[in-house]
Image (cartoon, rainbow, N blue to C red; front, top):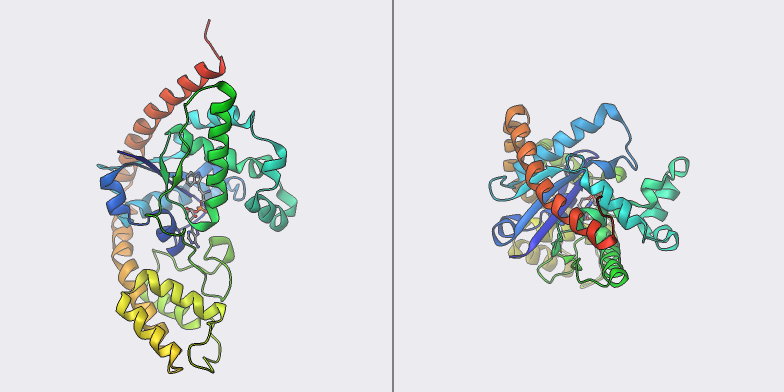
Amino acid sequence: MDTVLSGIRSTGNLHLGNYYGALRNFTRMQHENKCFFFIADYHSLTTHPDPKILHGNVKNVLTEYLAAGIDPEVSTIYIQSDVPEVCELYLLLNMHAYLGELSKTVSFKEKARKHKDNVNAGLLTYPTLMAADILMHNADKVPVGKDQEQHLEMTRKFARRFNNMYGVEYFKEPVAYNFGQELIKIPGLDGSGKMGKSEGNCIYLSEDSKSIEKKVKRALTDEGPKEPNSEKPECIENLFTILKVVSTEEVVMHFEDKWNTCEIRYGDLKKQLAEDIIKVTAPIRERILDIQNDEAYLHKVATEGAEKARANADKTLGEVREIMGIKKF
Ligand code: TYM
């Protein structure tokens, strides 16, 4: 049985990008593997160091993991900062992570450009902390969206480097959990780029139907195809990308045909898209409303999850210390 680890930062509510990127096919995933789902609250401090909102955000992600269908009886759900062993592994891995490779990471360069006043060391070493999360459980597979592909590649590099440096076959080189498909990028509704919290173009799992309909209605479109079988502009391609994940093949074919024959009506496409998004999110929203005030349940899940995750973490850290020559008197 493979070990699978999925992580989401506690920077706000979960959106469709997180759902399809990190929790893809989670029902099958949970039952076929040993799964860990965690909330990356340390990671969120690299860009969102606000003590007034951090705990609320952690609670949101915990609630939404559960509402999306992660079963704590089957999988382990935990909060990153409840497993402090990860900090030591992060420190140890940082000894073999080089400034050159860290500073060339696409996400670092992007964040450094966006937050010029806060280019902190945590941001630079974000990939080592992520590698520590993954290697802590010696995960075989990691469900991630396209934007995390490079971080996963770096995790493999750190694992390989560790094994080579210490002459061991200790860490596995984790791969993306994607059923052999391309990694997914759910686009925003604003015509370009990915759906993301900081881009402000998200549809959230907790959103009500009216608000989803409104957002989809406002999505950017063009004046329509001029010639049969023409290439779609990015804003239209984006609507089709989302349609492909939320709708049936017949629905997608129907609108592809309409596009190819220049008969497409964007109003119809948006109506169908909103309807099919709501089909996915409405039951999750209902469960969010049920769970979010159940403090006792959330406490139980987080406490039991931390215990299970720490048992694994403690074992890994002991072995890594031993390999690196850190010994007790
Ligand atoms: P975060 O919170 O930015 O994203 C969490 C997961 O959601 C995916 N995702 C998307 N997938 C497709 N389309 C989108 N528009 C989209 N937006 C977000 C991300 O790819 C990610 O899988 N660095 C991680 C958090 C993390 C982690 C880990 C993940 C920390 N340690 C260890 C896995 C394993 C992140 O990007 O969080």
